[in-house]
Length: 199
Ligand SMILES: [Zn+2]
Image (cartoon, rainbow, N blue to C red; front, top):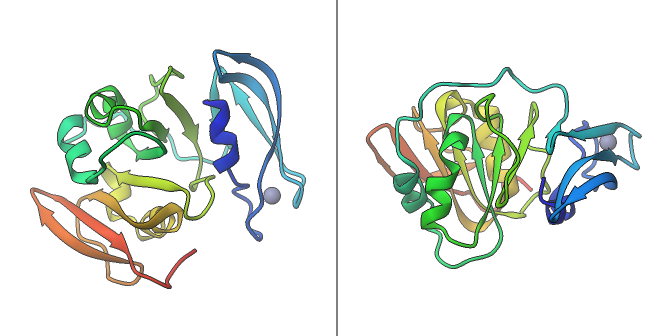
C-alpha cells in the first residue's frame, strides 16, 4: 500500500468519519508492506500484510474477466493529467496496468480485485466491505462486475468522489438518488455525484 494513501484512509466502522493512524513495521520504496492502522474513535485495528490492507470483512475475491479493457475504462473516467487516485472496484483491478498506461501519473487503488492481485509500484490493494476511504478524496471510481449494480457501492463511490468527477459502472444504470447518469453504452454507465446528496 502506497504510504501516502494513508492520508486518504478512513475507518470503515459505523461512526463519524475518522482518520487512521499508521504504525508501519516495514516500508519498501514508499509502499507499506506490513503494519497496523488504528482508529482513534472505535479503537479498531486494521492490518497491512504482504502490502495489502484487508479490513477482514470484505466479500470473497471476484475472479471474473472484466468485460472492458483497461484503456477503454481509463477513457470513460475522463481524467486528464497526473496526480491523485483512481479507485478500481472488483475484477477491473486485474487490468490496472492497462488503465495506468493511459492515465499516466494517477495512482491506482484496487478494492476487492482478483485474488492474485499483489502490491506493486503505482498500485495499492485494499479488501473491505466498503470503501475505507475519506469522503471527497478520489479523482474517480470504477465499479466493475457486480459492484456496478449494487446501490450500496454506488453510494460509497459517490461519497469518496471529488466534486464534479466521475463514477464509471458496469451493469444496470443506478437510481438517480446519489448520482446522475451522464452517458450509458455497451453495458457500462458514467455518472457524476448529485450535489448535496452524500459526503
Ligand atoms: Zn473506527
